[in-house]
Image: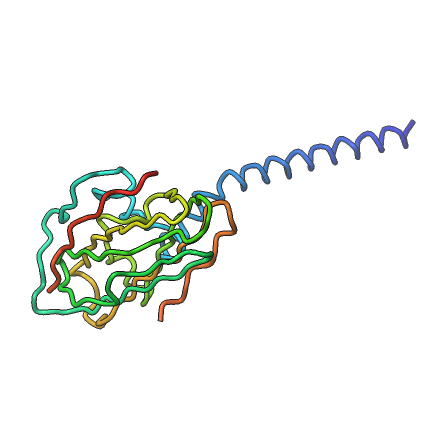
Length: 210
């Protein structure tokens, strides 16, 4: 009887430990998404910054692009913004221009061109990244195709705008910023963010079908 009680007692303890482990794994899995978002918001890698999700024309789907309140243009400084495009699949993706000179606080727009050269419909989304990395919190996108996923038919071609403002609070040591996008097919393996090596606003193109 003593051995039987001991075995039952050990079984009860084991069940209790397993229950605690299961509960911990569930809680950890539930917390992974907000943890990932928080980490990526701090590093600026592979996801949209929080400010990108809250500005007009972003995830909220605002139609009008406007400067944030109390934004002043610093005409005494000029920053070179370089535009890069990477693809993970069989399609064409490129910026309409490779670089532009901008002033901090100034509203700027660049167009990106995309064409589905496959013989089938596809859904895709872009991942942004920045170089130098410390520039990410100061690079505010007011409108960007990277906010959403898009579906394009075989051979379909689109032009999408990126409207952005560089925060005047950015360090004066930053003279060049590279904005890089990786375009990948939704449903496939999400790629890692690429390592990035006085403008007139371009009229926005027709918004792609979602």
